[in-house]
Image 1 (cartoon, rainbow, N blue to C red):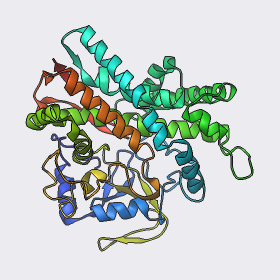
Image 2 (image 1 turned 180 degrees about the horizontal axis):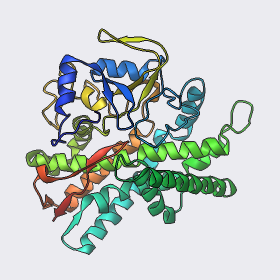
Image 3 (image 1 turned 135 degrees about the vertical axis):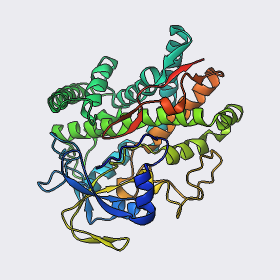
Image 4 (image 1 turned 180 degrees about the vertical axis):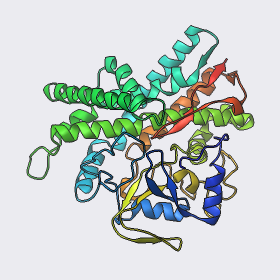
Length: 392
């Protein structure tokens, strides 16, 4: 059964390590009762992520469901040619410049969260007061969503992305509430445009001068970018902090040499991974051979980036966390090929500012439990500590 149940969340499950070495392409059972193909080797994962024979559209009657009681979401621009059009438009609106223009806004949010931490005393749960509020606030700012909606968006997303923390009815209710909220946000934004990503998507025109996205597509785009950018980044912040707590010597080095933070962020992304193991599922459009085995047409495939990032054939001593690791070999945390995460730059920016600011402002920041006792919260999009009790 997958995801594998393991007490040690600090590295890939023993089953993943065994599969990586002995059976890199294998079938697994899912919570929904469906079966899927697990792919673990670096090169095979890259192939699944970039090969056109693997589709991102999972709203097919024979596609595996990742969780019970909830059908796979229809993504209208998951594959070419729609995806090509969508990606070209997204990269023209969600530019590197727009991300860098968010630097001051992200820093302000981080500063506000840190000020609240100081004001409330000498300890807190970093997951609740820092890791999750930062990315939801950032997404709302980049989309021009009023701050008043942040709490509602977070509550709906938390329920929708849960594996077993909510009932099927609660998940469906959260999805309906989130859809209605998104519909209202799009309608309000059409009436009052601003200098934000959602307004840029509304204003984008094709070669003939006509609008590119309908309201339904704008709603889907917002939901997808919310799901992709919120919980994965929040969990990445929490897991990065926990990893640094487990390696105090490297944590102290970062305090003394903040210039190392760029490389440290990349190593944290490789070492901790941002996914639960579900990754970004694919649907096989035809028979495809990987590592000597044939994945049949119609199979649902789970390319596991967490395992690929620990592949000893690609990374020297992958089990070793080293903020000075040379980055010649790129991790697959943000995907690969035409589906490479468009929000990768924004996630990196938040990690860099969050970690740098926390280490600077809290020189005595410490974990108030042993790392092995930290409980984990496993979701569809990401997994990470359920709580990080700290004091300073």
